[in-house]
Structure formats: structure tokens, C-alpha cells
Amino acid sequence: MSDLLRHSGLQSAYEDLLRRTLASIPCDLARLIYLASTRDYNSGTYHHEGLSARHEPAEAGDALKTAHQEIFFKLASTNLEKLVDELELYVRVSREQPSGLLRTWQQLEPYRVAVPMEADPILVRLFLSNIRLALEVLKHRRIQLQVLPSDASPLLSLGR
Image 1 (cartoon, rainbow, N blue to C red):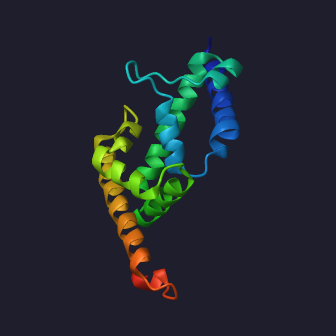
Image 2: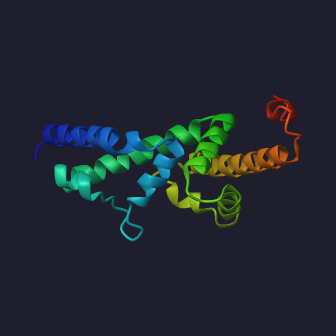
């Protein structure tokens, strides 16, 4: 297959992935976790049955890998406030109890497997550090909301 045709096939698979799958996932952090889950931990290759049924499997895998890398770069490059917002939304849309999810993420650090294989080591360290900080900020916010009187503004108590 020529590079031009392969590229157009990859582009088509990528756009399909964005439109059919990723658009329904509510935030970039959830997208990152989802995309990482499509990667085989033994081989590092990406698989998505639906995408592979509509596109060449190699192109589907490359589309998943590309999207994974792009979303990781976006999240690793974002500021801490936006990352806290991403984490807060991720916690809200998950089916887990927020306190349990935050505790598990702090203890087991499952977000580490969400890092793409070819990611820049400096960006990886920045991302991991910022996720840890975002977890602490969100945990602190939740504690503050629990101790505030019901008529107090949570924004005032957080120094915003």
C-alpha cells in the first residue's frame, strides 16, 4: 500500500475514532484512560474491534495510538487548574465512590498505565507529578466542602 493511501486510511480511521468513540467520552482524562485500555500490555499494540471492522486493523491501531499520544500531550501540557477540573469531571462521571477512587488513585497510581510508550520522559514526569498534585487539590476541596457551613461559598473557602 502506498504511503499516501495509508495516510488517508489512517486519517479516515482517526476521524472515525474521534467522531464515533471519543466524542461520547466526557473529558480528555477519561479519553486518555480509555485509549490506554485499548493497548495490549504485552505487545504495546492497540486494538478496537469496531474500528478494525470499518478500517484496516493496522490503520485502526495507528489511529488509536495517535489519539492516545495527542491527548496525553494535551493533558501533560495543560495547567494544574485545568487538570484538576479534568480529574473532578472524571471522578463525577465514574461509577465509583469519589473518596474510594481518589484513595485508589493515590495508592495504586493506575494513571501510570495511561502514559503512551513513546512519550517524552520529561512530559511523563510532569504529567505524573501534576496528576498527584491534582489528586491532592481535589481531595482538599472535598474535605473543605464537608466542613463548610451550608450557606458558605466553596469558592471563598478555597481562596479563589
